Every structure is written in structure tokens, then in C-alpha cells.
Image 1 (cartoon, rainbow, N blue to C red):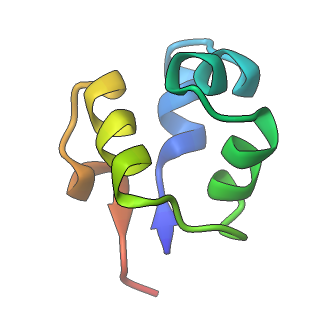
Image 2 (cartoon, rainbow, N blue to C red; image 1 turned 180 degrees about the horizontal axis):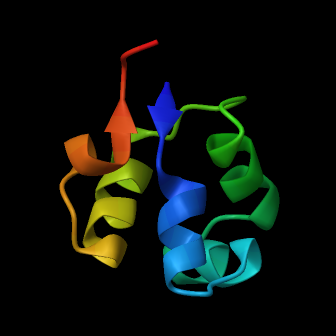
Length: 64
């Protein structure tokens, strides 16, 4: 699944560790989501959407 997580994080000058701490997950989880190695659980996707004040669809896309 494609996502804009790295782009959104960079716009705010947040590190992976900072995002991870805000979400209550590991930095490795954020890295894996950004690189497409891991799709987030629905609760994590909702927390990301709230954190960035966007909809899930504005962050994630199932398009190739």
C-alpha cells in the first residue's frame, strides 16, 4: 500500500522516532510503514490520520 507518511513527516520536520512516540509504536514500525514493508493496523491508521489531521485516504492509497 502506498502512503505519504514520509512526505507528511518531512513537512513537519518530525523524525520517525517522534511519530512513533506520538502513536505509541516503535520507530521500526514507522520505518516499515513508510517503506511499504508493513501495512498499519486500522487503529494505527486512524491514529496517523488524527496526528496529521487528514483522512486515512489522504495518507494511504491502494493504487499501484
